[in-house]
Amino acid sequence: MKRLAISFCLLLILFCSCSYKKESEELPELVRKPYLQSAIADSVSILWRTNIGQEARVDYRVKGENNWQTAKGLTRKTNTNLIENEVVLKQLKPNTVYEYSVFTDHESPLNKSPYHFTSPVSATDSVFSFFAVGDIGEPVDDGGTPDKLGEALAPFVDSLRFGLLLGDIIYPDGKSEVYDENLFQYFGSVFPYVPVFTVLGNHDWHEPQQNYMKEWKLPGNEHYYSFDFGNVHFTALDTKNGEMHDYDKQVEWLKEDLANIPESAEWRVVFLHHNGRSCTYKDDYEAVVSLYKLFDEYDVDLVLNGHAHTYERLRPMNANGPTMEQVLQDSIYSNPTGFVSITVGSGGKLRGIGSDPTPWEPSPENCDYPNLVAAYTHDWAFLKLDVNGKVLTGTAITTEGNQVVDRFSIEKK
Image (tube, rainbow, N blue to C red; front, side):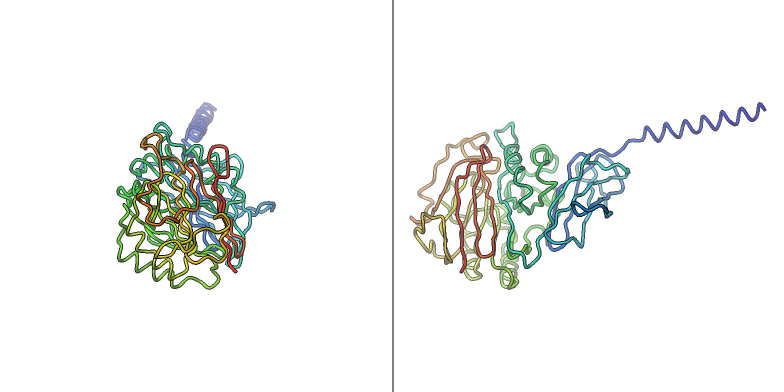
């Protein structure tokens, strides 16, 4: 009887010890909310970061349906000693709203309620919206407004299919250790719902292989790449410090890319960081201007850039300059010759404020052509673009007050 009592006590101690160990085990904590990447064709990549973890999983379903599907992925230690979780969802139905929850190791989701996103449209779809903005992650303590940009974009997440981040995403030197502080903490109401495609700016070009490319999952070699979304072909370029990364090789790739655009692509959009011609305080970057012949030859419609901390829209132009002086108050272009170039470098940094204190004013000496500028405004703003078949409409919206400061449309016959 005594032995029985001792055995029971030992079992009880062992059980209590195991229970205490299980309860005291450290559980993964969500350090960076999910962000969506490479939303192309029928797939999307979901990434998030935790303090610890070995197994990544996403449960997802079409919104309104009962059955959840499960996709497993990878975890890896980052250069900031966190754990990156990555799961790729495949065979998604086109243009469909999905709900999802993220898991690391544990059976409880890291999010209390499901996030959601809309899957990429099909190749035959021609109605969707996206946004474009650059020069974002200026520290708030230095006068930056990435917080205001995140707040301004949040009301649009259900109508936006993706965003283009036009370089200089993180100031001052693109280091991974300040990505959460200067960017991700302000976009928790945007990035889990809207995928983004990015390009390198000069402030991101500090050991990009060890920083920028550790933060994003992009197509191609991640310096320059292209993708198709509905009836639009998008081409991303790396302008480095204005002279362009690996110029000869990149230009050859660009020729090949533009020459092989699918016939279903009615629109051609190029996005990069540095401006070509401009009347802002930035000089013309000749490496970018040298691409105008290709843009003209291959019928590029729209060129989007950041770099100058302001907003400026140019009239349609080709390699030789503007192709028209003024049409319907510069707001409606019907079957124009040439491409429209727009600077949207006002996402979180503005000329004349904070760490860029030089007073802003246009630079007439930079304007080689008197009819170059169609519209400009000096305010924090992003650009919302709506594709509707053969009509592309752009609306510049301030990040404080959501005021429309520019609107234009390009119509194809």
